[in-house]
Image (tube, rainbow, N blue to C red; front, side, top):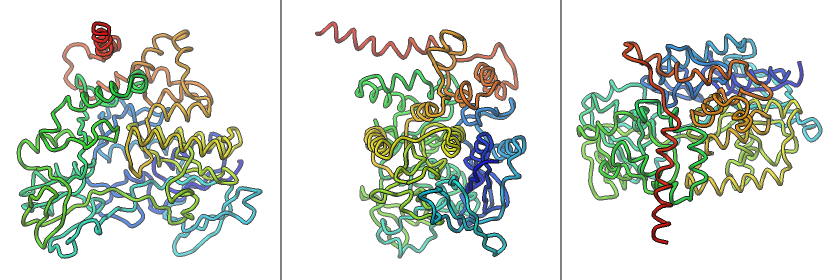
Length: 532
């Protein structure tokens, strides 16, 4: 075995990192503080300190064909959107089939990661771990941080005057597990993200009244998209990404807002974002509009102040006799085992090249896996990040200079502000980002070459969903089954829903969709030519 790599966390990012280290001949050791793999997707009926926490009713927002490990499709009969228990089952199967469990030290807490005195020469790190009350210090050649960003709750109590005098009960969404304790209660949910919306909808069946308070609103999307297909199988395509980036911004923005408003008019439900053209991650909830129509959920603006029993909103309205407040206000980044200045190397902001490498490090021997957020799924993103990081550690890929990395970070920050607005998250465009990572390791699909050599595959790759298999189609780490997986992805999508087969299974018609998408720019051009 080669260099020794310490991996912190055995969730999907940690498992991807173990596998990618092994592919590069590295020697991984993964430290997991709990007694099982899965990270965020390992459900417990209580929240544990230092661990991500989900509620019992969580389902995925990405469909199975878009969120698999790129060489490990889900079984045909798995539903397109999975309950957390089903996804955990898949994660365990992956770890067992790839023989990854032997590299994991369970119930072992990483308490400290520091540069060795010889770091400028060796790039090595000292990792202090703790198990059964005993500490152990080990030297590693490289570090992969895979502990996620859903661990340390952001509970902004100072932002809400009067909260200290509120006589009811309040909690963060990480402590919410099921709705039973809220039966017959009047509940205020602060925050219109995926968790806040899920919890509000679930509570609305048992609680007397549920109100969601939101500062800026949000687009709400259904998992069921055009013609009943999973949203990401239709929306996350290379051709759609090309159009979004190639069209004039006013056209792209207009099309985006129009598409987001197709299901229902957000203005009529109080959900309209303050800046609707920003590509912030939408809320995925199939039931929220219906709950609002039925009167069991109401949408209100930001809370101005609390009294002993009520909330006063910024529009002057009041929600009286509140029993419980649930703060669905997200999470803070924190790596308590690591010096903050390594990740936040400039202006106390997370400063990472491609969201992975600290650019000011003398030696590129530390990588953060799974921190970047996009409309794409976490598993394929983490897999590609880990492949690149492992190659850098193995010296088969070289990072740009510090100045080049800092310039890229500044350029990406400008684009991020334009597309996603001001936010603490490392948001990016999924396909653009994945192609950048793929380019570094020679795994980006060569579309022109595919059109010349395999037109059937090329059409599916370019106009069809940008599924994870595309990034194991060619180059280092190529998977021989990738072509077939791409050509049969719609079969696996339709199979679990066709329990009663009537007629032939349907799949999207790429050329029809192409003509439909192109019709608007052609119409604009015709109008322009007519009047000018």
